[in-house]
Image (cartoon, rainbow, N blue to C red; front, side, top):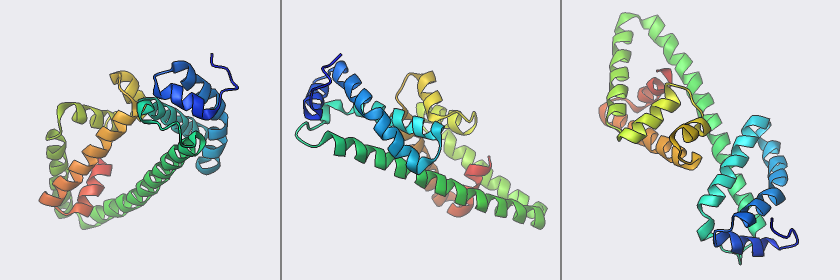
Length: 196
């Protein structure tokens, strides 16, 4: 274990040189501080723990690019802030989409068979879009959307990082939205994405 009297800059330098001990020391030094910081915004113990884990996984992934001359504290809090903003943005988008989904479902129910047939066409476009994804990306997307697995669970099953899972999901959604934009009404397409 590292001497806990080492400065953040010294530990950051060692971390950039692949030191696992430096990583562990920084984890011990910052995990509780980051927990309180993140929990203040997320208000959920589970979500906070997930975000903390993602922060340190990402920190290890980019260890070779860390500049020890810059403030490590500012650096890792910036990482935390970005993860929090991404989380809150995703939650807000999901809430808005769910409201729109309920409205669309009610519309289909009111308009009857014709609307259902139109909606089924959008479902088929959605299926076609997924089929066009690269094999690994398609697998990860289906594990997320069809099996309802968390990014952490997918990462553990496939032996990859949570960040890699997030990148695959983001790229999948980007491709699917583009595909819908080319083949249908994008807004309805996004609704189908969350209804299936």
